[in-house]
Length: 107
Image (cartoon, rainbow, N blue to C red):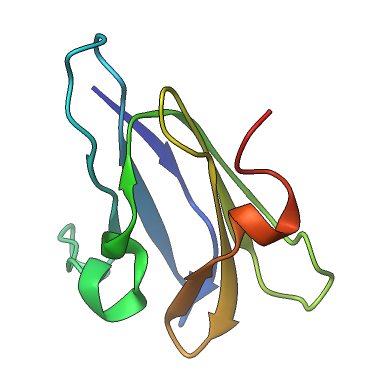
C-alpha cells in the first residue's frame, strides 16, 4: 500500500510522491519515491536526484503544502515508529528533510 500526494506542478505536469505505507510492527522502513509525470502516461523516478530517497519511511500519509510561504509546495510525511519528515522544496527539483529542526519529527 502507498500514500500519495501531488506536491507541485512543473511544466504543466504533476509530480507524485509515493510513500510506503506502514504495514505492521515488523515492517522495515523503505525510501519514499518522487515520480514526475512525463505527460504520456508514464512517470520517471527522480527520488535519488531530489534527495527524498535518503530518508527511510513507514508512512501513514502525505500532505503537500507550502509551509514556509516561498511559493513552492513542501511535503510532510507522517510516519509510524520512525520520525516524521518535512521535505522543504528548494526548487530546481531538490528537497531537503528538515523535520527534526522544524519540530515536526516527533510528537
